[in-house]
Length: 103
Image 1: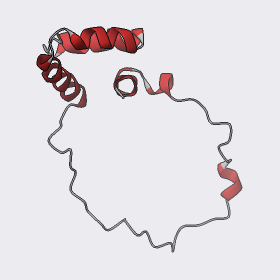
Image 2: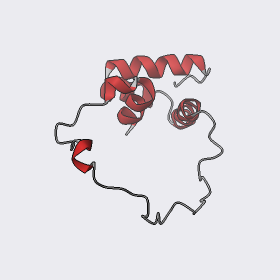
Image 3: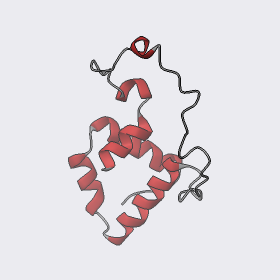
Image 4: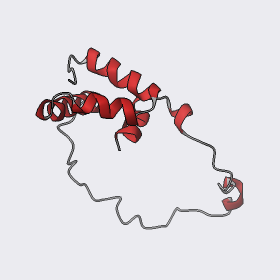
């Protein structure tokens, strides 16, 4: 899960999105008009359960630092073993940027 989260947060969209060859051509639906289609959820306004999270990168790094503090020395080894080197480097950079060391 951390690998996917780091990929999402660290890499530009072009680096993580692959073209889907099965994607239908928009021109195929040229005759369709949604003018009178009732949008079921358009009028609903739901509360954002994550509204307190202003910076997802900072939240991730702070959460990992708190987790690592419960078992010192364990998580750096896990991260180096299971994270892609690019994501490891980005995690290290974020830890330094937000001043949240993971020990």
